[in-house]
Image (cartoon, rainbow, N blue to C red; front, side):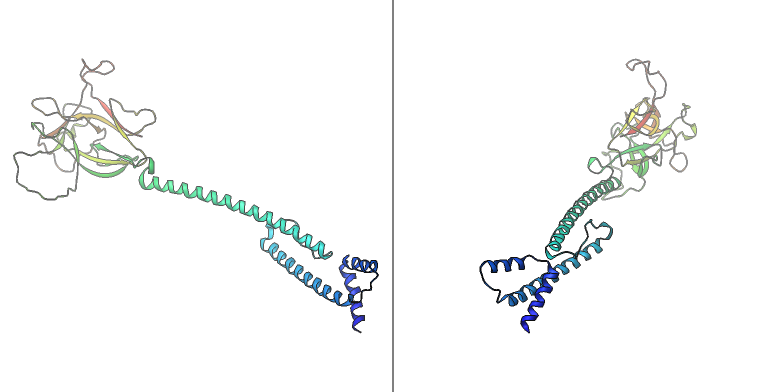
Length: 322
């Protein structure tokens, strides 16, 4: 009975498997003049082994199907197949694995490109952040200038602080020769309120414009304000005397007129400053203390080339940035 069962299994297996190994086995036995006395036992083992292989292949195919379902529309062409003999099925799986491997490599290359673009975006954002926070980042941290005669900055700059124009008095024999923009909210350390003999002194600055029509005479004897301005996207600023336009490639911050201490009597020298063409004044009544003063500046022909300059004409000025 067992022998009959083995023979039945043999024919069932040959019919379903289409394998050549059984034909080769029988031919080998005939050539040697031997009978396949143990063929049924061997056949049972081989059938069991091939059944296990078929189950393994089915598991692999099921796994491949899950992979294709997971990647959906992005799946590479090829598909899976459960038809054909075991060798055909194995070849089909090998082909599919090759296709999937190439698909994986393409996805990795795509991810590498995404990573590269992401790093570029990060770099651009970092540079933008540096510009917003500190001007031009590594290329510069901005620049400041003083806007004389105004309590505010133009739209191209940010206000650092506003204050009072100050300098030396016209009758002082020593002291500083430049003008300063003193903040409205001074801070103190150690001090003495007694007046010392040997010490530098500084005075508020008043407009002296009664003899000119460039500015309104209503500002005569009024104290001059000032503002310190920050240009965050520029690295330098420049005051150009005798001009109302900036050199090519520069940005105009404001225009005005040159002013300085007068030359009459024993007045002390001072620096030349560019006072805004639209004056402001320190709040309050006229001071008329006649201490620190500024006057419009005129050209004097002789050593100064005329033309292009004109004797007795008030000089303009412009503050530029770049």
